[in-house]
Length: 146
Image 1 (cartoon, rainbow, N blue to C red):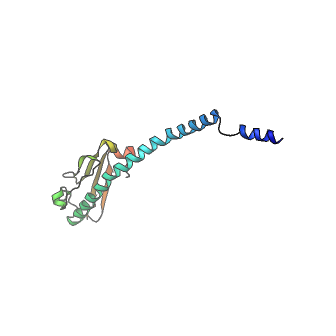
Image 2: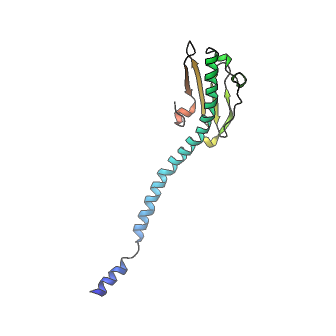
Image 3: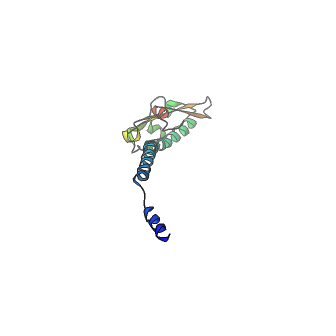
């Protein structure tokens, strides 16, 4: 009986080809799901560089609007805001403030999805509240939040 037990133990060492093929198939299925999700995550992360760069400009616009009674024409250039606009490394077009509307705009480079980012301020009648309205193709793609 001892010899039979020893033979059985030797026969049970290692994995069969079927078991290895099943493991490879499972890994392949998991990879096919994970890789696209990871790529979308990378695009969102790169696009956030544009949103972060725009936040500094948006703060300057908000302060300018409050100091100038909500008059958009007084806050629609970098000179009027008293700032130097630093461009995001992920932007294909420079971060800018639109004349007349004071909207902060940028377009992402292809590596960040190529989406547009537009955030437009609206001041209340007394300029005590500034409401920002976000638009652009980044919303539909889900890479920026409203």
